[in-house]
Image (cartoon, rainbow, N blue to C red):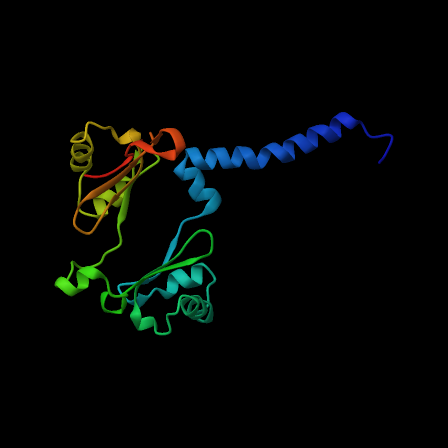
Length: 190
């Protein structure tokens, strides 16, 4: 628009503004630490049926906001909630207490195990040491579980331990044949 401005400077600025989000996205995919800085971490609002007021204050989340998000999920009593976490995208994820969860087939055949949230112990091929230790497991235990399937930790995209101590692993190498049929399963429970 201004004839005195150099077009090269304009193109360089457009290029920089276009590449910046792409570089941030790539770095976020490659590094959990960078992703935590850029996107933040999920925050627990309700744990073991108790509201964690300090976490809500830190996220500037009012009681009205919490109740509204619960109502959107058809939950009208906080006492029905076992665990609730505010995800980095702003959504509230909720785990109801066992007696408030919808009835499932296995409920008719005896009491199931206590419901606990799964713990993510491997992310992007790296062991999350703090989580594995807080769960009462060791890195050697985790590596032996992975190696029992002739795999390595760096081959795992996501690994979680359930309440029974089983390790679920989703591997990087998803193999698909023609028309989307799987040639080999890239997920396994160890």
